Amino acid sequence: MKAMVIREFGPPEVMRLEEVPTPEPGPGEVLVEIHAVSVNRTLDLVVRSGKYPRPVKLPHVLGVDPSGVVVKLGPGVKTRKLGDRVTSYLIWRTEDIKAPPVMLGVSVWGGYADYVCLPEAVTYLIPDAVDFATATVVARHAPLAFSMLRDKAKVARGEWVLVMGAAGGLGSVAVQAAKYLGARVIAAAGADQRVQAALDLGADAGVNYRTADLTAEVKRITGAGADIVLENIGDPELFAKAFASLARGGRLVTAGAHGGGIVPLNVSHLYINHLSIMGWTGQSDADVVDSLKAAAEGRLRVLIDRVMPLADAVEAHRIVAARDGLGKVILQPTA
Image (cartoon, rainbow, N blue to C red; front, side):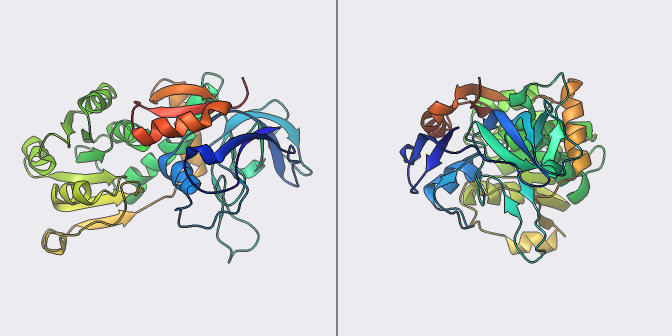
């Protein structure tokens, strides 16, 4: 099969299209012919650079969220059959409970390839009405967005939710998840075009945090501040402004740090106003199934900037690094 292989860490050019052996599915695994995989800023660009905090063994193949068709079954597979259209979840546990979880595209070869082997337990059937690119984005981001808001931040109907990076992969579905859960949403992004995209997805108000005072605008819109901030950037300046915009009793929940991750914290604001800061990367099988169902019913939309051939992965990484697009960049290994 063809795969974009990394044999050294560095700039996008370290990825090269190579012929490598097609993997064989082991017990409980399925071989998936990949039709879509997205380009992620942290789990692709940072891993490729060699700066990801978990060890990555070379040679390596990126790609944490492939979707495709089951073409071969390993021994003991019970819940999948040949021809199933499936998407995937990037983390799974092994029998060694003391070992860290396996991360697709980080600790094992991922989806920048024609084929990938996956445990059947981390595959999910794609509804007929959902294409592969949409399924990849939905499964990657929507379950986490729902879990962050519903399970961790405990959003209540009528509360104000500030979504940072509201036109990004996670942010754009978080805007819709918050509205679905009955909240009022302020979409914050770094360009007018991105703010408008989030407004088109249902946000009640928008703020360009590069041209306006984020904290002042949130307090003007809400009167007292946001009840919840969904933060997935980790930029020192933006984090501080988002945190300062919380109302008394507010909650900040975060699942990202591509802006650096080391941020200042106003501890006085934290304890005087009884605030909470929570990190979260959890989701359930039901979250994935429900998110795909919502997409099939037209209740959940995703932003896709472009779909590119796998051979153009180097250029795709440059586009994502430059933040030139609006929505996710998708690689298509199999036409």
